[in-house]
Image (tube, rainbow, N blue to C red; front, side, top):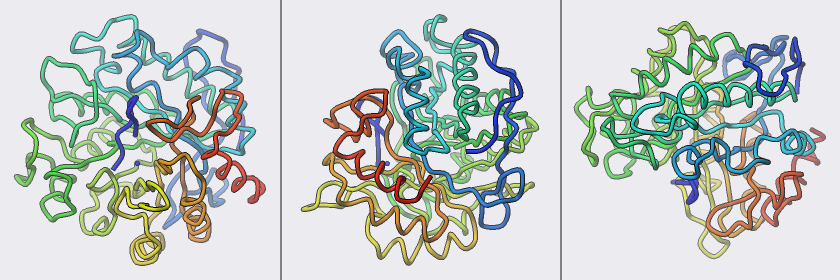
Length: 368
């Protein structure tokens, strides 16, 4: 999500070695996460429910701000300590296809190996703080000479497979990393249709993609690239309408030879007067779609948020999610005023906004 990079419909263990500033990200966590039935489980087989936030910044700063992170504090130890003080056990890190691959004219100082190593160090630091990390393909290109500068309806067929092959190799030996194949698909003019679901799974090769003018890679193809690289990491797959729908997820679920898929959804609310901002904002959707699906497959709410900077609309959903073992990550852990997009904090020490207060208090009530 983001207007600054935003586009919605949307503890366990320690490191084996200590990472030094600027060093390569080679340390691996002693904790892990995997799919077992309809749950995520850790290295001991105990159920894990992810509760955390999106970090934001690394999807756009490399193409908009001549940096990799959005300011010096975003990836700082103080920021990570702030996340832990809220009780987070997970963070979702957004990536830019062009920056990771170092293609399409992105400045070398903020792309390619430099960008990759910065992301790897950040993931290691988050792991060292006891947090699982979701790696998200947030901004992609059309597969042309123009770099990724915004969110598109689908990942491109030219660069997205290379992106996921490379990311998979980078993190295949890190069992505390989860892959989110594509942030928010919205093919076929943002409809919840058979054609949209087929496009989401099969890409342009399936013959049902409409509403954009480039060849798209489907989730099945990208999952194949991840598994082909040897990575067994848990992988999240979302549906159409900006990852807002899961009503046909089981019917169009990609085939995973190792059974390590989780369903991804983003849920947003607007204002108390007009709460509708994403397809599954109502309790009727939670009970009719999410509850039965959660009995079949792990669900991760990759993003949730309330656009009025309030905390009156989303807390009932978090309670529902807790009751059904559904994971959730708020948008977003960046210091802001909530103007334009939901911001959880006013500074990277973790001082909550009016919107963030409700989330902080909810987590405190769980004793996490």
